[in-house]
Image (tube, rainbow, N blue to C red):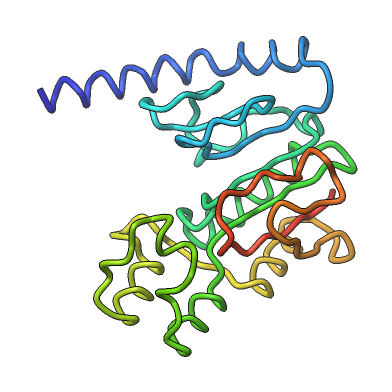
Length: 213
């Protein structure tokens, strides 16, 4: 049974890979209004967005392995958004993703990243008030036995987390990806000068940064 599930999953991914170019062309030719990519959508399907994920079990618009890049042409999309996705990429793969977002965005387009905040986690550990934070209830982490375990789990998440940013580090990497430093700034949860990027977050513990091309 387990082997059958693995085979079905891999077949689904192959089919998705084959279908992706046609779906992208249809989106670009038929879409009215700004083209908004929701990267690593998982179980958080957003209406009005192009939801892209590699999990065959979740609802999405495009099944795609994002380690192979964003499947849209240069200068073709208006917004790229991801929430608690980039920490699952290595340090170098994270930079590659930011460069891909810069490439795919139209001039004036915006990348918005929401991810775990290393400074926030360390403060919670140092001040020993992390159990009172909203994210603990959100992910059912009340059972964590200690602050040490909490910090390690956030850094690693059983091997799924690869790199955790703080604001300074994330903004520096966005600059390395091609975004001008004057067009990179931190934002608050669900707030943005762009209406398309308002009320998009679910997690109040996130570091949120916007970068305009």
